[in-house]
Image 1 (cartoon, one colour):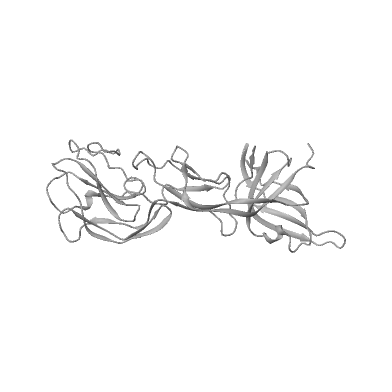
Image 2: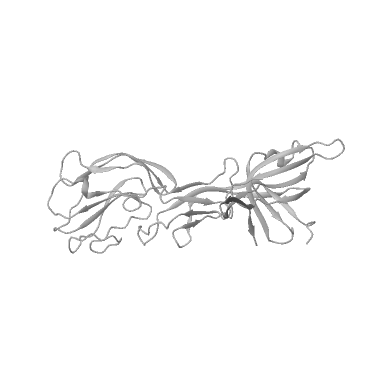
Length: 328
């Protein structure tokens, strides 16, 4: 098939989206945005802010020695994408069960940035359940828009100072951190992907909120372009001779993308003004059909100014991931 009808486009601008909620795709692992691609151009990289604790928030028995209270250190957290500061609290009241049975309380930061102690329902016996809900002995749900920073688990109905053994702050179990579980931005799909599913610990069995600001690229045709090469992985094999045999091993490397373009003056051409930026490039083998290749990487240029020809530029695309193919 001839490539005469091909077209190469580059990221010439962006459409920004301010901090907003991403949508759970249904598995509490992949969260989608309204963008088909995330830009990484200068000043436009996605800013991802899952709800959760950032710093501080340590919960300890009340230093006053009073019965049934805890102290909470000052903290910072992300709530709906906003970096929120919460002042320390002393002698925060903890309600004991009505009888000598198990009871779990959840210490939360509300969407308004206030400390709230949410009580679970007394259990039927001394067994702590590890499920969320409103039933007897269950852990209370985290309110939608809130985060959990600790749990207090009690077995006695007798007033007494809370002990450190009754306070739980294990990350991912009793404490929601913004940076846990680990996540990555998939720029080629406009998604945020967590390495494991977020717990369904909020009211309605939903995950905590995931928020981001991002920008979607706008593409412009690069005129007089040719020789486009996507960024692709190549493989090599090496061997070592040992007694009576050969040991082989393979390795891989990601090659640079590249293309050539002929310019107007080689100085003020739009593509030259974007050199050094991390940009998206779209290559359509047939400009009238949908299948295309997407490549994101830092644009490098080597210009040539011939005496009788228009200036030309040999461009490299230094990518951190392989080019991807899109059918539409």
